[in-house]
Length: 145
Image 1: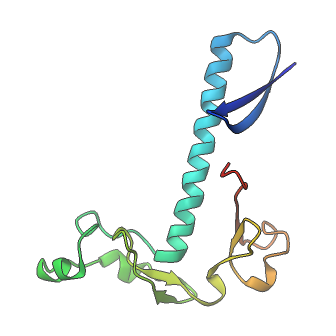
Image 2: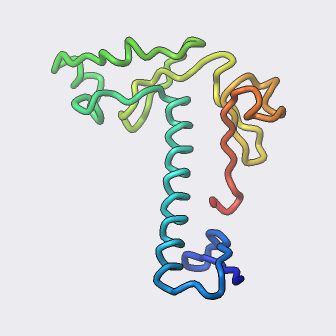
């Protein structure tokens, strides 16, 4: 068995253990699959945070428009009216203009522990095993991994 240390530039990405008899082409494909899967998970975590902070996406024809433009064009966010967070919401404008600004409120709010961990759910239960009580925890490596 060999242990491959995969890096991007000087930044460590992950370790991959493989049989010493593996072909280089096979290893390259495996490293690419793992690396791409990690990128997907990172994007998913980022979008979960954005969803909690700014609500659902606006329809494509409304994304990036100012409030005045939306009003002038008489556009309406029909999904935003249907997709209201179950615990209620607080308006928090999305500066990018991709989301409707309906941040989750109360016990469903995303909060930071200051140790690289952010939780979506009741703050009193965040230190418990997050998977056992249905609260999504997002952990980030200090190096952004």
